[in-house]
Length: 432
Ligand code: AMP
Image (cartoon, rainbow, N blue to C red):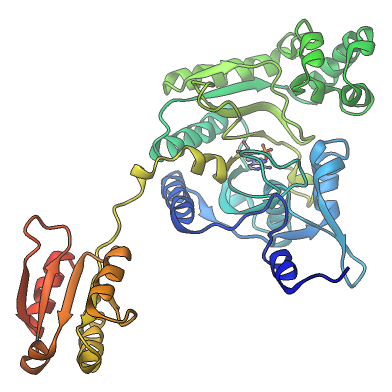
């Protein structure tokens, strides 16, 4: 059956499932969130980096772990025209480590390196509220410093960013997986325990038992949750040194009055995490229960790309989730702007000239000539949120004057000004 022009236009206009356009209030929220976050992070010593959206697939498969959900199920991977295996980035940290190695950014005398970035990430996940196939993250990486102080300053940065975008009631969920020795010891104990209940585990968890048992701890399946309820606690398997490290992290959080809960089941899905792992959630989970962001320490990750065996800690915040929670009242009031409106076509040229004069003086100005009559043009200016209507009729054009009405003033009177006077008045109104 032939596809009609109407159907084919509809198909063309449909975005890819799980991906969406950002415009209007949404894009304003996006920009506000990123601006606020980067402003805060600058005060913590972070500088911008931007890496490509695609990387060689191995950048992710060798670092995140072949058994992680992200690598095994969710990557957008392609063979390009030259036969290279490439992947749309599912997260930011691995690409930043690759960039540090490629550009030799890490030299000991500039240690530590603090880098921030934002942009789209891609995961072939099941789309649902707050979960998309293309989404945006802001990431913050603190490389070259090991120890609880760097961990807590990193967590504090995330909390400060969230506070500055109006989310005051956030709590850190925190855990420690210890170093590799503790982690291995714990994984073994966990597998021993879970094997006893294997027949009760979900099909996915049965597979994970062999490949990525830690991941079973954060399964959302009811049967898995029940089995994991009495699973061994990672805290009991930390070496003395690893335990002291974690205790210090908690002490420092208290010192800066950062609210936390210890969550021994917080393993996060990726292979590269060691020691501290954390997520940020609203204290009131009835309002929104998924994590706003998360991260942890990843000692040993940079070593996979170069000879620098340095540690790092970082986190990413999901911008769509923050946009969902950001009230419109947080957006700055719409900027003021002048609408220059000719009464008839006779005054188009004068209106065009005065528009040029205003713009030269950096007065935000729109020339409104769409609409068949003055009434329609005024309506359009108001619809476009212009704050000042600058009307030019025949009389005004002859005398080089304009009539200005301030849209939201109580009196809404129009007052005549000479052109230069009008510029002075608008500059004082717009604080230019
Ligand atoms: P992750 O890299 O999985 O730890 O994710 C960090 C944050 O990114 C999460 O807490 C979410 O806020 C956000 N995020 C992760 N996956 C998605 C997704 N598919 N859609 C929207 N936001 C996401």
